[in-house]
Length: 247
Image (cartoon, rainbow, N blue to C red; front, top):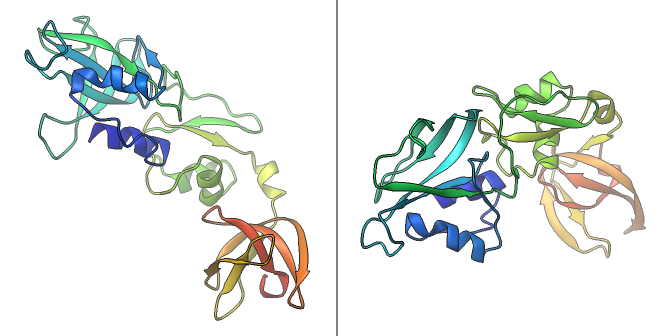
């Protein structure tokens, strides 16, 4: 389950094989080319060893996903019990040197989430022009977009977010300023029966219903008696659409 959350933060199942006994996650991650941090990092998987060995004979260990970092001594995590089917959240402090976990456990490190990197604080980073924003509890993508004069579709696109309804506290978002967004030309599909997106050779990619929003990327070509524009659709597909059926 924790590996699923790790991949959800990335936005795709990039590491579907990141699962094993909890205490062995470090070795598994290294084999997959992932970086290990000695301290908790946003979106990373914290790993604890149970007992003196990594053989599972003296315990399977424990893992947790770092959802928020409040300070160098306090974090907020998502966790699940061994054999459990649901997440629970824990506010952990490092007063005992093991991030609050019981005796017999040893903190081994934290697997860095490549979608975020080694972020060790959730302090908001000031935005100037095109910058970043760190999601806080209660934020929504549409609310953040409204605050910075852009659209939730644009934020989803530039941050590779497949489901705009899912963002999490501590997530680092790239933000485009209102000035840069205002330079983007948008169209909507205006064909009652839908409109095909074509590739550079005129081959059909996908049909889109009336009202679908697209972003103008440049001039395309003339084919089948129509002028085609190069566009990016709201699902991030890029291709060409007939200008006559765009408004």
